[in-house]
Image (cartoon, rainbow, N blue to C red; front, side, top):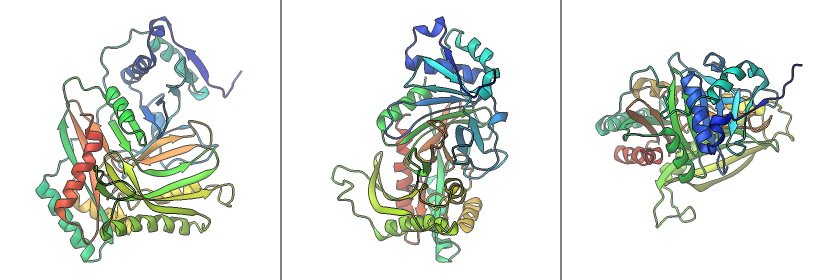
Length: 409
Ligand SMILES: C=C(O[C@@H]1C=C(C(=O)O)C=C[C@H]1O)C(=O)O
């Protein structure tokens, strides 16, 4: 009889003695070996992580950003900064879900029943000693030197002075050799410990590659109580022993930079003719070893006549002026023309939709992240420029941001 209930697979004898983490490794090994996409994540404040395995790469290709409503399919969105053949927009269907809070069974979605024999076989194999992570087929992006980044910032400031853009976010890639025996799963676990307030993720997709990150920035969230949330996060300074969120002082440059992001979000609400939003802040918040300015926005979806607000906002927001700039089109054009490397999934967005329960979505901007290659990691960071930007400070700021995820290598 057809049913929409998942099927709960039990662990076979070979895996019976494995603890939760070893079972996770065993599942990940099987997904990698059989060429399947996977996403592992830990939500801010949550104790346990979840692993999702999609039945195939083909099933993960998507067009539009996901719909944030309870009827939409469950899965994990992994979207690039800009769609292209090299960096496809992906939505990994929640075919197999392993919840580390419930390690005794492996639920397989009704739509993925065909997967049960293969999955049963892979669970019964001897646990693998090493994992073969998926790597991107694209060339390693150019890593800007300090001189090159300085030039980029100067060009950005000149574009602001010439009034081509009001704000633009420039970024760069940095290459780091991986230490021998580097273990991405171990690094993921370390990040979850180190950054309890971040959204920590490890995504591996055939042909697309493997990305690891710990981001502080919500792009669009719909919670169980029907609240839509987004945030304007910008402005950066180091968290040092003598500053705290309560005593932090911000320069005019950072205040303006963050206000532009907040204004951008308000404009998105305006485009949808929505007036009933709550705005809190800006406040100073901690993100790893950094402080940022943040304004929170909330809409109670049960009190407004906009059933598709979450979906519409997501499509308007990305890429926000926290990673692109203002006006959006001109800033994106500037980035395309001058940045000199492919951001790929850095400053795209990612996160689960309808996985915890129908109607719950948590999408984050993919910041403080790295891409894994066979022997090296490519780290990414950017900075919002305004007319007052100083190239040396902007370089320093990217250095600080690289340290968040860089701490695990
Ligand atoms: C672009 C990044 O971060 C964004 C830019 C910020 C800034 O310019 O101060 C701060 C937080 C993020 O919204 C990054 O981490 O790479």
